[in-house]
Image (cartoon, rainbow, N blue to C red; front, side, top):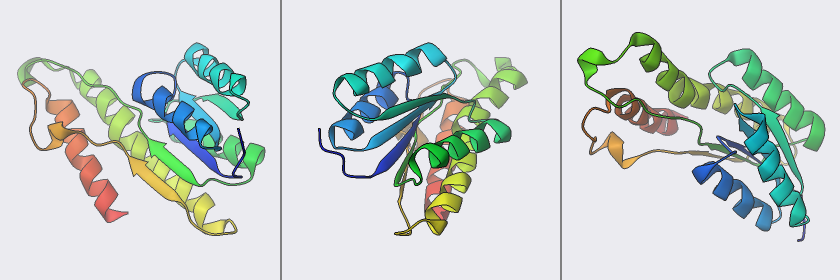
Length: 170
């Protein structure tokens, strides 16, 4: 595997779309930082990437918490010196009728999808504006649910609508 000198960060990188994206980016020569709440899956992804002769770093992170996100981006910059791609992928939903959705569950979905994408985008901008060469790419994982919601998905659908706005405004 040839290194292209580029660095990618994938939130929700321990499983599913995040894991597949992290491995694909590594195959293209990116050093990959995988972030997520659970350390064990992150280490498994790092092991898989390193097994392909790639470079990877797993950083346990709660993207809904500003201090955790700041620490993630500081570790990324300290380890690799730059950031070329951010994939805001972390998130989960909460199924059920709106009248039964607990506020705490609503807040957890908003924090994982919307707040996390905002905080990570903010930190990525700070790094990308100051590095040489300047710039990078930010990819926000949207959903068809933003336009065609599934029943009983008010928190997830609301957040994915907001992700469209965050993407357009940044």
